[in-house]
Image (cartoon, rainbow, N blue to C red; front, side, top):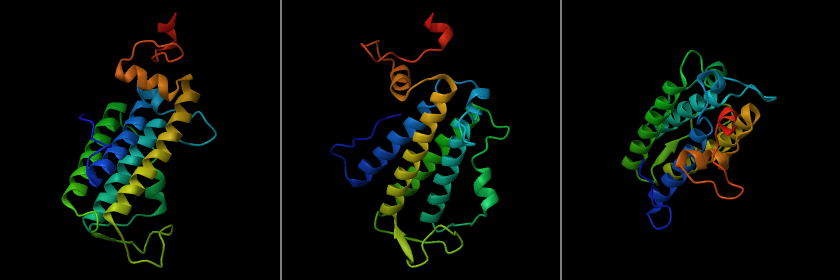
Amino acid sequence: MTKRNTLSGDEREVLLGFLDAQREALRNAVYGLTGAEAKQAPSASALSVGGLLKHVAAVEREWAGMIRGEHQGKDAEVHAASFQCGESSLEELLADYAEAASQTDETVSAASLDDPVPVPKDVPWFPKDIEAWNVRWVLLHLIEETARHAGHADVVRETIDGAQAIELLAAVEGWPEQGFVKPWRRAAERG
């Protein structure tokens, strides 16, 4: 994946770049896990890193649909189910997330950041006193939502095997060992 220029790109590139960074953090949280480990919910919550991948893919699709004027509404059960991996493999969850991200990027790239995005009135947590957001607001919200869930994934992952985000990033990017930063490896590989 080509990294976007978040330093001197235009506003859309910068915002999509920040979203990409949060997506990467969420994907990094599953690095090196088995499918079974990705489905574990080892903390006080019911969250698993695989379930978080599935949920964020669903969230991106929902918001991209709203930008395109295709809001379909959903009930609380559908929302809750979006956190469950079901029978999907980790590879399927990652591929689905990549596809959802690509669709979001295409939708955002085809719109003006100032285009209105009607606020659905059937979602209980959405405000009732405004008629529309704009694409810019939606994109900022996707950054916020993805960052929130990437943080959840960090906690879940660290609970599974002690892996911390910086160690996972070092492993994903192939950094050499540097003092206190050591790329993550399975315990059996650490000797």
